[in-house]
Image (cartoon, rainbow, N blue to C red; front, side, top):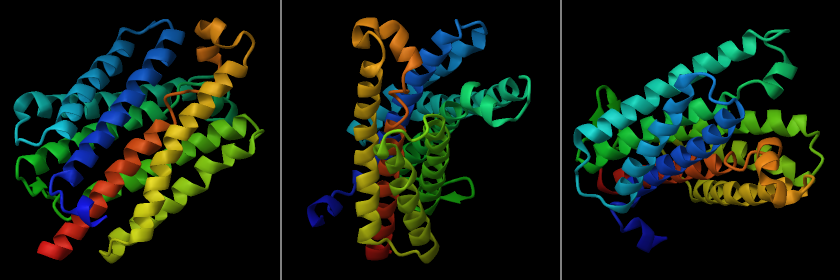
Length: 275
């Protein structure tokens, strides 16, 4: 751990890498869901374009800390946040316009709110990573160097992802005991992160919980791949089963947010050491 903490660029890389993973999850999820919707609204292309840009911008930032990014990066992050907020509005409208309005059944089967929210988070985390890489300590009134703002975004994002997982796994009647994992471990990790932010005291146990949450996201993708395979025809009938089976891109959102949370804790540690 001491060797890891000696890398001054690591917190920025983790935040940017988390944003890139979130963007990848949005790209994959939006591509599948909007293809299922036959792209009947031209605006359904926007999250695919924007998330692709965010993968490139944030992926580059995770790989290289050189203080650059400039206007293209700022424009990409701003567009991601704006389109994500717009997508939340469209998805909420899609739910409420159905028969029964805001009902559990419509939340099960209408447009999911998780993907647009993840795009907003990716834009926010990407903006923070770019600012830190450029030597900025804040964006407007929001302080970044302490890690508190980034940790708050990551913690709230994890809790939101838990809510989506709980909804979809409840729809699946928690038929597999492993379906309880994303609604037990990640909220504990998020609560520990938020506690550390409130105390301004990063704890090793929180780091471990976030690391386990990051691993859980990748393991969950594997379970979802297996879930697609279990459908009639398996991967030979992938065009239908990918649409009908569990969403493969959803679990890695935990990984992206947990990495950003770890980056926030490292920023807190660095501030406590160097002031």
